[in-house]
Amino acid sequence: MSTPRESPHPPSATAAVLTDAIRAAALRVRVAVASDAIGERELTWGTQLDVREIAAYVAKYATKSADASGTLDHSLFYRPCQGRGATLLPHGTPLPCTACYGTGQARPLPRLAVARHVRQMIRTCWDLGRLPEFTGLKLWKWAHMLGFRGHFSTKSRRYSTTLGALREARRSWRTEQARTHAGLPEHDPETTLVVGHWDYLGSGYSPGAALLAAGVWHRKELERQFAAEEGC
Image (tube, rainbow, N blue to C red; front, top):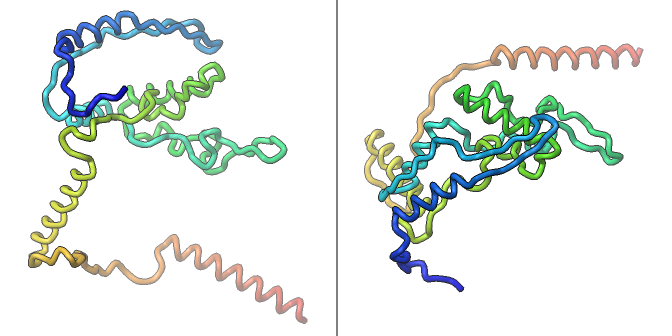
């Protein structure tokens, strides 16, 4: 049975009731795990539980929280090898992935631009996720979100505004800002505004390109000499 989107919440669902329910649920959380690598552990909710009543745009606070923790917005596993560090040949023999050097990571963990504490949590999720007993949790796949799966934030389609409308507003604002900065007149909405300019960067090969060109020329020259000697 579905309920209308505009239906009000029950009068009994007050902020105080929800707060008590959250605190009670946190106290009951008990998850037992066992592994040959870490032994037997019991996971519980920590002491850092902060429940507050807010009445503003939730995504704004969620974004600030994500920036403060310094987590990543993209997966860490290397997609061509699916994070395995190797690909299986038809007869079952693993072929090490040369792009990720067998790590399965799109970017090495030490090079991530995150705080040391966050990097350690990401590394822990990645290492635990590789253990057979934790395969079902897919911790390595969601290591960039510290093991939490799913979308970062969700909201009702009828709530506030849509993300598409926000993107369109930002696009219009930046276009108008660029037009004003360039001193251009207002353009017809039916036309496409192109803002750009040309700068001279240089001519000839860069040092790296010159080295590659010299190598190609040398190889071609050897091939030409070999063909000439065979002809004689």
